[in-house]
Image (cartoon, rainbow, N blue to C red):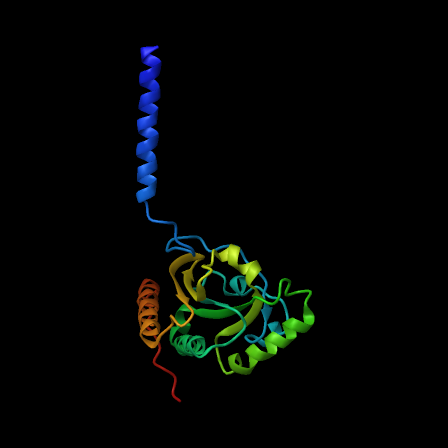
Length: 216
């Protein structure tokens, strides 16, 4: 009987100690983390990008293969000024990283569409609104999907307006989320610096240098 009581007390101490350790652990963060494998492919509705894919459902992850890619996920179909600034900055670095075949795409995640394949009228309406601004981009491909479909796949934070993921060979190198009005000019510059640092490492490993900015 005495041994049984001691065993129960020992288990209680272990369980209580474990619960305190877990309480002290930092809460799990939403979103992909550095070193994670990129989630599986998906087929958004392509709005801009390669001519043969426009107006079609096409996987931009598969299109870029093992090449380094900056993927941007925007909640909603509004191309806000901060988001447009981000896309323009990314559009500028693509040609400079041609030697490592850097790719970039943005997926606007509609909250008014539950099935981007079936809801034709709403899809075309939102696509046209996105195209009005995104068609100015030369290298960044823009697409549309539903927030409900993409959120669980990419573990997106409910509070994020924009999530930026840089990956190479399907491995996440950088993942950063911004709440609404959080993508300030200062934060944007920090993000671009972080992306450039990762691209320098990729170029160095490949034995190539960045190309000079294209002449305007």
